[in-house]
Structures are given as structure tokens and as C-alpha cells.
View 1 (tube, rainbow, N blue to C red):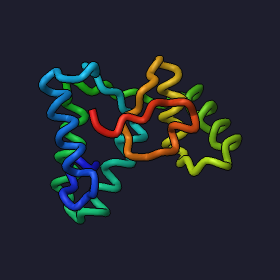
View 2 (tube, rainbow, N blue to C red):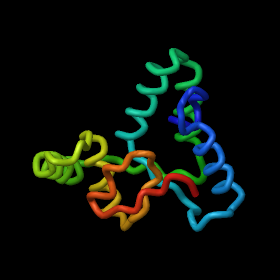
View 3 (tube, rainbow, N blue to C red):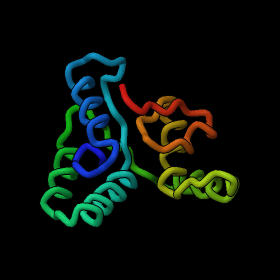
View 4 (tube, rainbow, N blue to C red):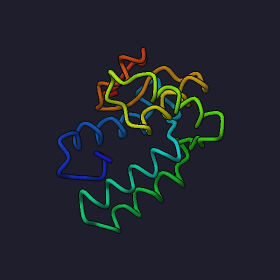
Length: 130
């Protein structure tokens, strides 16, 4: 979302990070996201910017990306996300964050590109800028 919202405090960092990924200057060749993150990103983009076209551009870019893999939350991931959400009250994780963590573990992903510190308490490496 920071990539698309020019008023976001992380906009420049997000732009630079994706540019470096696109040029092959990082160890990351594929990026993973989920249907829940897509939902959250589109909703936030539209509500924070008031710009429907920008939200559509964001969704189109994710859905048509050759470097992003869209993972889907199925029944097992949903159950695991719910268990994590219930168990970790001390961490301010959204349900979407819990689904991201469960999907990442399921797919062997250890680095999460986020500006959110909560993932480190789940033993993920938070990558702020690559």
C-alpha cells in the first residue's frame, strides 16, 4: 500500500525496495502475498487515498504481476490462523497478519517485507527495505 500512497510515510522506501527487486539487486526473486493481504490493501488504499482508480491499479498490478505469487487462505490455513489469533493476545496482530504468518510458515517463507514490527515476535525476519 505504501508504494501507491504518496502520502504514506514509507512511500519512498517502498518504491526504492520494489525498484531494487525489479532490477534483481536483492536475493528476492519472487514475492508472496495472499488473498487476505490483497483484500486489506485494496480496502486501505481506497479508504486512505479516496482514490478508487488507484486501488484498481494496485489490484491489477498484484493480480497481473510476474514476480508476485498470490497464496490463498484455505480451510487449514484459516484454522491455523484462528488458533494463532486466539493464542497470541499479547501481540497486536490482525487476523490478516495471523493468516500471513501461517501461510509463510506453510510455504517456507522466513522473511516478511513489512513496516510492522509484530512479525518479529513470531520469529520472522522483518524486511523493511531491501
